[in-house]
Length: 409
Ligand code: PMP
Image 1 (cartoon, rainbow, N blue to C red):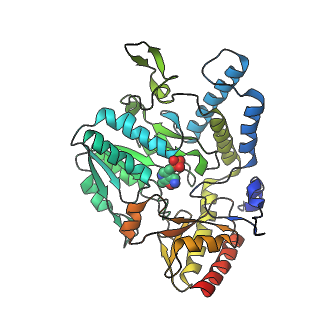
Image 2 (cartoon, rainbow, N blue to C red):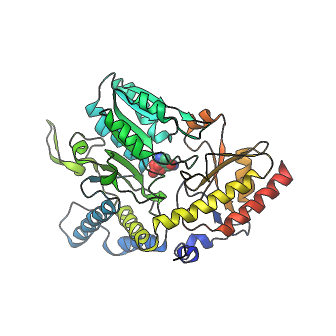
Image 3 (cartoon, rainbow, N blue to C red):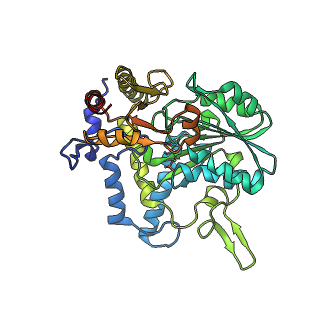
């Protein structure tokens, strides 16, 4: 069956938006956060209107309903990610999930001199926690270089860096370039060196159906808001044996069996990591998003649709004088991102000029400064495509971009 993008768009009210300047919104900032289908907004609204109460605490009806919804959402979402033999810990997003690996696993299992490997391609969420942990406990942090010529991770250097490492942490898909790393190969390299492996799948999960148990990674960080879910929710998927090695990170109520003035006993399993009032509305919204994706999106067809748009856009942009494309949107490992720069129009100015035409893109360093340094640029413009974008939007974008270059270059 053909990919029915209009049917998909009809679920997203915001895509009808007319901006204050009278322009129809074209939303190409999906790698920052995706829009939400109405079912997600309705599910959260229904919770607040009809059964909102604090989960895992009281014995009244609303509290029972809220607890059932929170835990039902966990079951549904972890099954969606193929994590039936693994655990899913709710977090505020991918950043918190990466910090949970650093402070809930690495801090308990690594000591001075132990090696953590990350890469130059990472979002700061997969760099800064390791630098901070290095200050705390003296781990050695190794960076695998980005091969700027080949526009991909330097796998030869990874083979070397992984020797003697305790943990290898890598992004699934680059948020700057849309290049999908060969995560299967990264997992193999890490495990053959006896290291655990953590994936930052913030940008992978919106584009492919993750099968966590099948992949074999030890940890996987995911952001709900980048895959049609609400903000304020994400998760860390953890293999059972890695979970058994973890200790508490953020502490307080809800995660304990007893607290005395002498000390605290913690709950086991994922319950040890979800302190404070749970993210109930957000989990309910994320569940609705996951169910919506299951009902409406075939990931294979969606990937093809997104890939066609992004590679067509990058081809057209390469014909515009002064524009450089980063990453490899047309390559098989290109996942819906066109990162570009014009030689004489500053990225920030380009953002405003595109906005004047209704086009929402991201400009700047994308929380990935080491990657930009490796690429030799201070910033880029990033158009990121998702399931509801159309070829007509891409065509209008190219017309507007040509016009900007003609007028302002
Ligand atoms: N990792 C990557 C690759 C990302 O793109 C992002 C979001 N820009 C994050 C981590 C952080 O995710 P969150 O906003 O959910 O904390």
